[in-house]
Amino acid sequence: MRRTVFQHEHEAFRTQVRELIEAEVVPVYSEWEAAGRVPRDFYRKLGKLGIFGFGVPEEFGGAGPKSFKFNAVIAEECARAGVTFGGASAHLALPATLVDYTTDDQKRRWLPGFVTGELMTAIAITEPEAGSDVAGIRTTAELSEDGTHYILNGSKAYVSGGAQADLVLVACRTAAAGTDRRGGMSLLAVDTRAPGVVVDSEPATLGLRSSDIVGMTFTNVRVPVGDVVGEPGDAFACLVGIFPQERLGIAVGAYAHAAAAVRLATVFARERTAFGKPVAAFQNTKFVLADCKVTVNALQAVVDQALEAFDAGELTAEEAAATKLYCTEAATGVLDKCLQLHGGLGFTMDHPITRLYADNRASRIFGGTSEIMRTIVAKSMGL
Image (cartoon, rainbow, N blue to C red; front, side, top):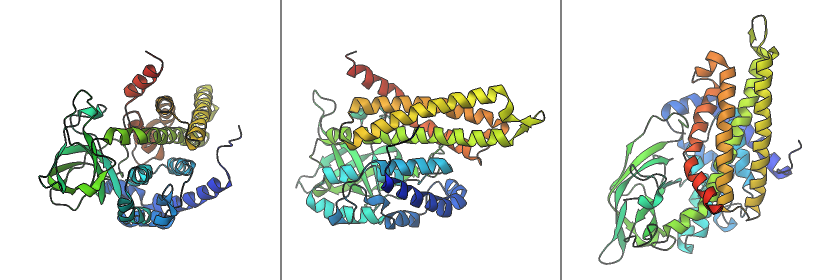
């Protein structure tokens, strides 16, 4: 089926991104995975290409309002090559927050560096004892007696891009929750160079191994009141505002992983021989790949519809949850089948199919687990 979601400007951007990946990422990606992060100068290259400028006002060096389809192109091209842009994925998810919920002073201080890659950002929400239950966070920030700053204390887990971030948006509790568990939460922009900020763990993750995923501890960190993002106590409203975009991005990535897996498996099945003939000649292989192709077609249709709705400002939280749920669950099945067709080669970490399989597994956890997505969808049905 002819795909109509992307226009000429998106395809021109796709060519640019594909060339960048082939020249700058693929040859050294195994080194990035071994290091657990992307070299900092690569982020500056992305900045020079304007990739961090989408959604940032032109007066701050950005490209102004732009379609989320550009983000989708990046996800598709990374998946096609079996790579990621590391912690840049977290950075790319934050323009809306840093534009919609910041003051003029904050915009002037943060956005120009955000666009160039000189000031990398991350967001810290999850804690060792609070994952899907965002309202259960225990990190606290107490306002000083003179009212000039907060004292931040607590720990965060799984902060993508955390070790190299210059500014981390930290969800914390600045007041008692009261009857609403979501109340009393604030979002503080924390300078990672501040005393008391420590990157204290780098877990060996199954996938996304170049994404700089770390744990962070904050001990008596002084955060100026001028670095509160949004209104004090209103963090949950800020977070809810970014969830649809985050979940759409994860859904796009899952679709892209599945599409890339089918392409890899098809090529492998044609080239690999068994019992004197290509693996593709066996009926089982044909049927498996046919089923996978049909699923990828359905994934594409769902993703494209959601992209159009998001750009039109019509993608609801419930629709974003449903899109993420379907795409991540269906893509998992496709990736498993495609890896199986690779036989023993699919069990080696140096093959793209294995990277895709491992990277995609996080999609059913990050941004809200599949169980949380089902809860949201069921609630929207009045259940």
